Length: 226
Length: 226
DNA sequence: CACGATATGGCACTGAGTGACAGGATACTG
DNA sequence: CAGTATCCTGTCACTCAGTGCCATATCGTG
Image (tube, rainbow over all chains, first blue to last red; front, side):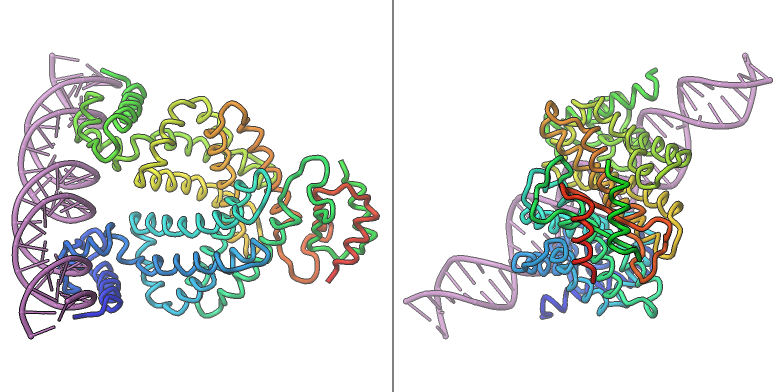
């Protein structure tokens, strides 16, 4: 009778309420299943791991991210980061659920672990995409590092937002962090350091946080040259 | 009869061999326990999660890292990264075991997940340490980002080393990556971008991958100034 | 040796997760 | 519409992870 999406929602919020009421460990898969009007067996067909009832949204988001990555173009790090925007949007929209889930995950190791592993999925998507973009010998390593940084930023943005939903604008904060990551680790940042320019047409120069004139900086550079 | 350390070793390599021989899923906790000459019940006292038999070394390493973090001083990012050196040393020493374990983890989701979660433990140690060091409003966020980057680098170093143990020197590669991370995300890298220098005595300037003279760079900067 | 502390084993139990089978709904085809 | 293939669900039964409880070593210490 119920549409699959609607059933999924009933399972998700039903599980949430049961976890909150009885505690996570005391809530069996059977409890959740019967609360949603299905059998235990069918429950495990939907969620091979019991904890994943709470995280069914990520399965959808991951598809969105993957799709967006495959069709986007532009500066790789920004593209990677921005591919997470629909996820952020979705989480913000679902704020009350996300907050309650986070509260549960704070106290229950299995839930927290599961969440970490879901975040890892995003990270691997981004890393794979970045590895495809960046050319060069060690790009796989950098792809992984950058993806980790972007995802840490993303996670922290959500944490911050959950701590003070009113005052924080997660989109703005994430955009800002992404800027900083892109600037420090992008084209001109992390990249081969061997002798001889790999991109002679575009040497890497980053100047941050400076009120100095170009001449003063030139002087600084001259002094710092190894 | 057996010393605790020796028993631990018997369990670890015994489990490894059983996993390799019979497959991970087909190997029960009882198999491992009896192979090491203890009861199933005692086994679960040693390792609350079955998969952790293979990762018992990390419990030790984590203590080393924590200790090293608490007693070290210096540039925070480098200190954080270098706190992982004993781990790297240990893994390299135990090369054959680590390689076989990695091969197993490549094919078995539960093992891979468990490994990810162990890495996460290191990451949280580093993040906590960095958050203690960095002062400033958003330092918690940066601490998390930097810790994630450092740990991604660390993981990748190990991956690379396992792929070609002969040609790669993991210590050197890690040192190099750590340099790059520290340079791009350290003092002069990621940090407040608002108007006005936060560290007027030390403006952030990074020049990488350039064969240009200071004057040429000054010119570049002048052109790029927003 | 005696005795308290700690580690181990045995037993029983709950619950996660899975394979096999059967019935029912649904979709496709003539 | 009837017939049939397909998919989805529920039931049953089973293995095994993980845990509490209690009895029994085993060990350090006086």
